[in-house]
Amino acid sequence: MSNNVKQMLLSDISQSRYYALQVDESTDIANFANLMAFVRYEKNQEIHDDFLFCQPLLGHTTGEDIFNVMNTFMQENKIDWNRCVGISTDGAKSMVGINKGLIARIQNVAPNVISTHCCIHREALATRKMPADLQKVLDESVKIINYIKSHPLNARLFSQICEEMGRSHTQLLFHTDVHWLFWGKILNRLFELRHELQCFLNDRFELRNCLHDWKWLCKLAYLADIFSVLNCLNLSLQGKEISLFHVQDKVNATITKLNLWQKRVGNGEVDLFPSLHEFITSSATKIEADTLKCIIQHLESLQVGLKNYFPDLNKNIEWIRYPFNINTTSMPEGLSHAEEEQLLELASDGFLRNKHKECTLTSFWLQMQHVYLVLTEKVLKYILPFPTSYL
Image (cartoon, rainbow, N blue to C red; front, side, top):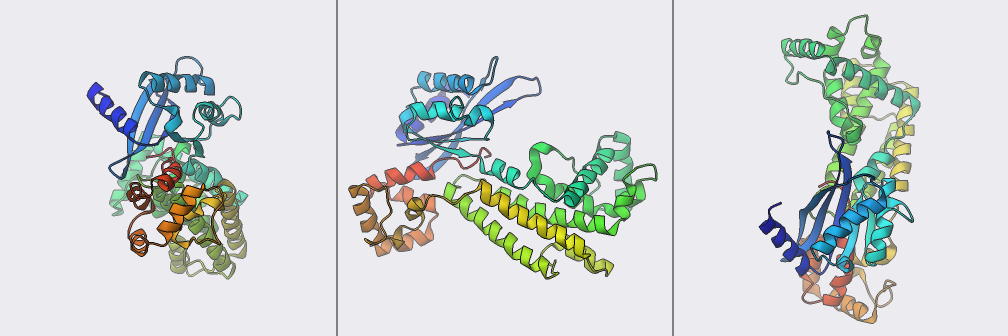
């Protein structure tokens, strides 16, 4: 970062009442550990996300080492820890250790900070558990993909077959555990090119028969569909104005849909899964009961996982989302007298009620700063923190 750009950024941060940080430690291809930090702050009634720094981690990468690098940068650039209201990490032990983790050390110098475990990382953790039958199909899918992709000759010959058969896609997508939630695209491509794979794979390949197994293909189609849903959830959790409230709403909506799908699959309905529905319809074969049971178990497991990793937000901050539902008999706890008075005044303003319907949650509260200074100061502490370590 050039010095003039850095100075402009530091000036913007200093003029924002509060700021939030997003931190990620990773090792590059040369085996060097680096610490990257992004900052979120308010400027001209808008939320801004910017790259703050990238610093090498020499030696160990403990919570203490990471904090020392961060603290040195903050002190050298006169960034006040007291105005930090959020720190988002990927949940690694060095970050979240109760006593010696980065977050614990930051909370010692930044009393207002709210720590958040990256919502996309939590989603990945919540969706990894699945019934053994589906896990077996997933593992076998990886082996099939790797058999093609890890051998250049196989990849070229397979691509040639796809071209000859008139396919718009001629390559499988490589699997990587780092991008767990991109399985939707990977499995959809595998399912799409199943006929080409049937032609290409010879008898010597141990998993060739999987692609001729109707039940196996049903499970592959389901996995492609359900991971596509999770991919969409993943993308919806990323963006500049995404807040903790937005994340909770999106996750709750997904849990509700999963519950509905579980009931429908229990009745033998699979039309909500496009690849699976098309496959069954085209083959004019009824899906077997044990496959339906496996799908139901997975849908139930996804609901449990998402609920565990995304517990409901504190009810006492719901007023931030629904400020016009407040009256003297439903006043939330934890507000000062000045905050209560400003909240009641805002809740009685019909013009602002209409404005609230037209704006995003973040935009609305940022526009209220000059009128309801005390109240918005509290709100900023909840809408500024990064909900994810992905931008």
